[in-house]
Length: 336
Image (tube, rainbow, N blue to C red; front, side):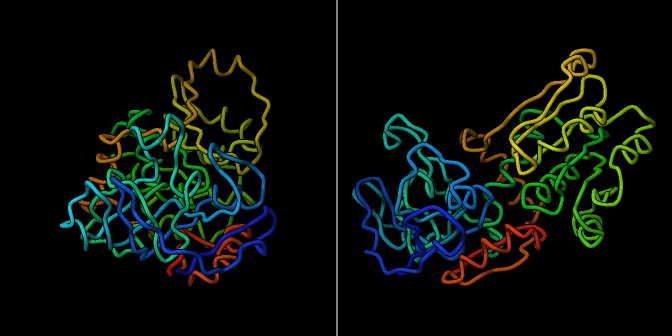
């Protein structure tokens, strides 16, 4: 089969289209013919060498947000599953995980290939109303948004949410999840065009171009200086000092990324005297009931991914470059 691998970390040029052996399912596994796989920031970090993860090794086939069809099964899996249209849950659990954080596309070969072998328990039904591209684009970011905003922040109707990075995958998902929960949404984005899309496509209530305006001014105006109830933060780093000032008494701050930098200086008294809850989340730790509750939003038509571009598999390097330069809105998808 065709796949895109990298044998060393570095710039996108290390991504090489190659012919590799077709996967063969062992007991308890299926082989999925990949119809689409979404690109995530973690794929870029792993390829560049900026970070690593348990089980990651070289050569590597990335891609942990996968949608496709079951084409073969291993022992112990019903042949009736062949032909199922599925979304792949990236985290392997139970005995097959061998007691470690075992992620398809990180510790195992992923979806940037024509086929991928996965444990049968990692499959869920593709939402009927979604295309395969939209299904792949749902995975990580909508689970993250639901996991952070609903499961942990316990977002309530009428509350105000600040979503940083509303033009990205996680941010665009969070806007939709927050609106479906009945919240008022303020979001930040890096251009007037992205702000317009956040309002027009995602129905954010307020969008702030952080390059030209201060989001803190908008927060104060919208909340009568009270502050927001919840922050959904895939940025961290350079935005931390102003973000603290934007949070209301007993506000909840959900951190899920660090594209703005790993380190930040925090005045702990502002956390203490406002009783702010600061919570870091990793969507891979979501359990099956939490994943199913997130997928229920897709099945009920409450949210729908925005696919900015679907790249051919052999142009995965160009997809990485697009993510790195920030010239996208929503999700970037790769199609074999």
